[in-house]
Length: 308
Image 1 (cartoon, helix red, strand yellow):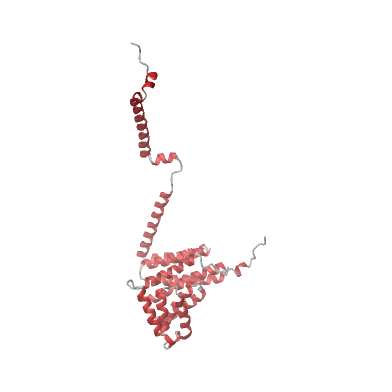
Image 2: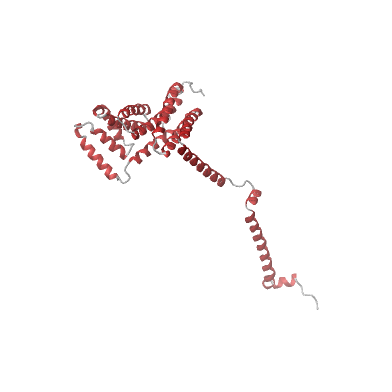
């Protein structure tokens, strides 16, 4: 059998179905679901799509393409129509949008590209969105963009390791850490910060380089030192998780032998022994009481009468 070529990594595709990448995609889908109004129905979303489709008919107003893409995307982030509309929008509509809406267009396009596995293209789109939001964008929009950039940089980091481009990986890593720092400053709630940290660390643990997760920890613990309330909540979550794991581990670990069973269940074992003894006493008593009645002939042989 021939040995594998040392240059096999040059044509080895990135595993876009890895657990880490699938988790990042799931996070983005969850964000999209959370952005929908709670009381909206599918019928209403489909009606919005129909209205948006009518508005762009004949491309009389190309800027309406963004409204259509957003209508597709809010119904389903993985809807191919959303990606197709975004690609058309990039060609004919984006230059005519105001700066903030250009950022929205690039952000939506970046998400679509990420979900279909075009990570490098996704990163470029998200970077364009970042530039737009610098000029016209709220803190909420910049936070969403930074989370997207963090996911994209994390995947590029995984891809770089898979192909052994260590220098490229290092560059992407520096950007990822920078995005983490920015994203943490933009978080409005303590839970958001914890979610960003845990998801990012879980992803970077898949790179094969332990230093990745360690450097993320360095940034995270500095953030905790500066935010005591977040630190207390994070430690509380950790304690709850550890207690839960201990409880499950204790339940899963059974006694190794009968002596351990007896030691752990002395009361139950004692009751069982008493029950066995009582059972034999009752059986013996019944035997003595009913044997002469049931078997009189045997009784005369076994218990002969004494001569008078």
